[in-house]
Amino acid sequence: MSLPSPRPLLAHTVDELTGRVTEMGGRPFHARIAREALIAGARSYDEMTSLPADLRSALTDEIPLLSSEVREETRASDGATKLLLGFAGREEDMDEVETVHIPPHNPKSPKGATLCVSTQVGCPVACPFCASGLAGLVRNLEAHEILEQFLRGLDVGPIGRAVVMGIGEPLLNYPNVRAALDVVNAELGIGARKVTLSTVGFPDRVREIAPTKPPFQLAISLHTPFDAERDDLVPAMRGVPIDDILAAGDDWFRATHREVTYEYVLLGGDNDSPHHAEELGRRLRGRRATVNLIPWNPLTLFEGDPELPRYRRPSPDAVTAFQEAVQAVGTVTTIRWSRGLESDAACGQLRLRLAARGRAD
Ligand code: SAH
Image (cartoon, rainbow, N blue to C red; front, side, top):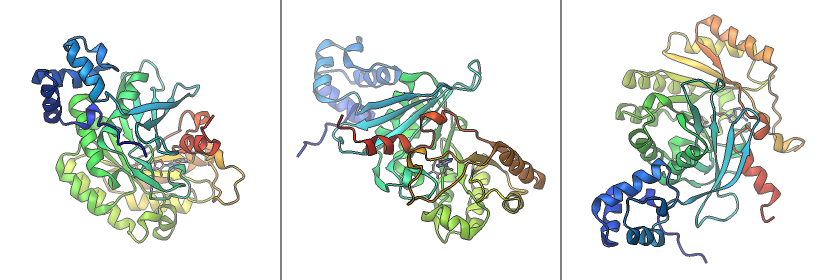
């Protein structure tokens, strides 16, 4: 049996780290120097030359600087870099998450790159069109593991925005997600309006979080305006009426003054009919909300697998027609054309692909 791994630097509060550093003979302010240097890009204690040499070597022996390692890195032609991260002491198969660094379309854009982070290893929600939940939930990520994804992303390049849209359902691991995002806000300087957290909805949790000055904007995955259909598309939300989700979104807007984005994965021939567009527009009309359409990214890994429900990516014309039909009813609608399709754009696929291939080689 493997011994538990020592806690890495970011798993310590500043007070805890100060205590450890003084036990090692350092001065209290050395703790803050080490933490800031890590966030600023140091990847070994030896690079922290403003710390005394003895302290650097004691820290190297006792407190791992990071717990994550990049197990695979793929880069798509559009510049998106997908990282597969594993964690020390958790070498068993599939205990890995994906983090994607997505540069802006226009390289001169002042918006900077967007980082997409994961919150759980696997996902318990089990949406049938999504690769992340196909193998269920393994575990929640720790706050420092969520935070480390930002540091690994910064190693790829500067980050201007973040989306909590990787593997996992963030509201089922909220305390850890929140702790990480508070640090991202305070210490990485990525403001609340530049971070978007995407969830399947949990109305009570949305209402609970709204008044707590959350350091992010909210996106809710709706995927259909019909209750019975949503029960199938978002199984963990079975029985939760769409009305209740929309009402919670309204409460969110009242408490935060930030509009909710409703995400809608477009599954060709399934939820992209004129009837869907009209009903979606009707339900959202008059609300402070926008719709973000996501043409489905095929799970290329599973092509030909008869066990899996088959979906189709709608044609560009069908996507535009759906957008126009929703807008005609009076709801602002944008389209997210996913990038990096050739690098397993559908989130969760890289993790499954490597696991399926067996990474003993
Ligand atoms: N658990 C969160 C975060 C998921 S990822 C949530 O469900 O909101 C962000 C969005 O991508 C969600 O709306 C999700 O349904 C969608 N998505 C998942 N797999 C997809 C795929 N293969 N193609 C397009 N969108 C997908």
